[in-house]
Length: 100
Image (cartoon, rainbow, N blue to C red; front, side, top):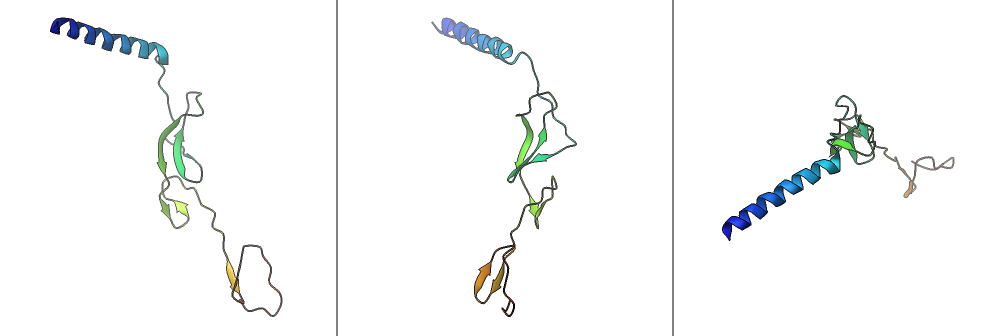
């Protein structure tokens, strides 16, 4: 009985390996290690194998000030000012005579 279980286990593992290789057709994704792509939260190396959705070495940004020290991504910081106890958003105008 133990011998049968061993044979079935080895057979199952072999079948999984064979079908796993057929599923990926032996394709290995490749990435541009000299280039970074990014969004607001993450940077990664873009794929060079034609699979644009694949991301090599994805990681969260490491900000020093407003710029990621790894990929150079700069986050947008909205500046505000306080005028007569009212917080103004960027681009909002003040009237002449108001104290900033």
